[in-house]
Image 1 (cartoon, rainbow, N blue to C red):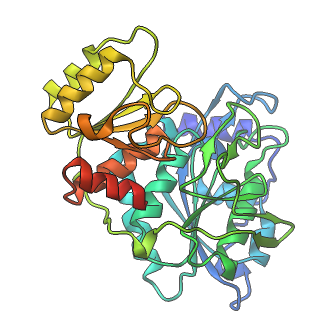
Image 2: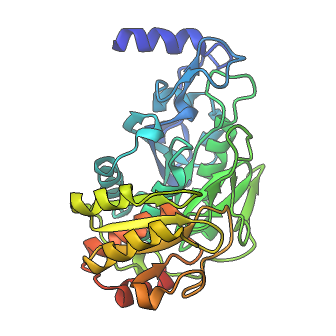
Image 3: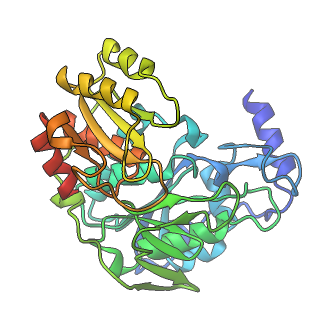
Length: 359
């Protein structure tokens, strides 16, 4: 299997340089920042049968050394310390890998000779991983995630420039203390705000509610605002192996209560509902969720709409029903925060609402 994957990658990457040199400590000035590049797979490490195929490809088959080798300019930006953490399609991201990644980043950033970390990731769950790290990394050193919408084998692959820009942002002094960042298509986003907004476009990642933090281009980094809500060192959460069971359900025309009742019976600790509009919930689903809350299940109202925020006691009577408002977090980031809050011992709608209002 490994041999087949290797031959596929070599045959498919016909648009990449044949250079075998990897930017590393050996090829860069000792005065440059030292940035660890942790690869996890994804489209940025994907390969297809030919250069015109940008959808029928295999994710995660290109190793970190190959990703770095096609961006020789990295040696002018930083001393690179590469590491392959995983080789997965990010649709298959799971909590054990989150634990491994967060713990490894915290270990690296505790070292005096590591100035920042870049994580290459798939686009499908990047926003969830970024927000998780934003709340659990215990350092003010830069952590920057990047990815690609086109595989490494594609014509005009966007991964190499995104990778160069991510390292440039991680090496920039202005990135320190900004929490976890996402560098994509020349924009710099906060992990809390960024979402994937397109299935194919190279500008797929946006911060729709309040915009990007800044931009990076041709080696220049500019921040136009700073992150306000607490994160990293100011966050109360720590990564661990204990992940409370939290699921997401959706409200839509004609929805039944079957899924919620099954989840309660299965012993879930929390449910995030992707409501319509301002987090409004179909009457049948609301009855089931109210029952879930009465059984001690944390119920968070979010919205399936692409931007905006869910007002507490707006479309549903949260105080009476024991529900929590996700604010401006989408359902998937709300799930991340709820899992961390429950793992930290958060109980009851009042305490959990304070957590959501804070982070």
